[in-house]
Image 1: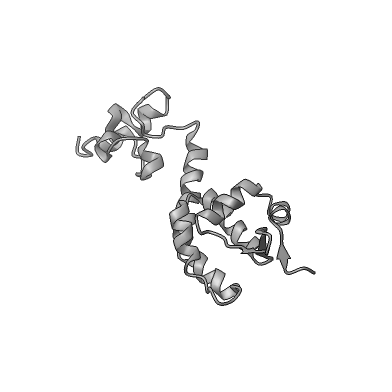
Image 2 (image 1 turned 90 degrees about the horizontal axis):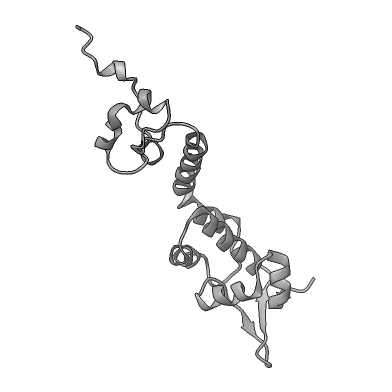
Length: 159
């Protein structure tokens, strides 16, 4: 098996366009050796870096954040499992928060989200008189997920 890939081979293996690979290289996310004729040759292990970049972008990391993470990998050898585990561990919390955010979005599409529109029947119970505005602007159930209280909870129990 060849340990080096052309840019076309890396693109075919990773599903990332050659133009994107060139962009990643220009941004310092991946690296290539050059042949005498100037053609790029990527170590086969670079496919994992490309996959990491694609996944990290989908999670919401910026290219600068991705580069900062990749810069933590050893430059003198191919990163191993422990290297990748250490790297991903630093943003697991961010992934978990994104998952929770997406779950709130999925649930909130048909429920009150605390945005202040008061257009759904459930808003009368979950956000009477736009009470959630006191928590700040925007869809409060999506942003901070305050515990909803029925309007009757505001009444003095003593009557």
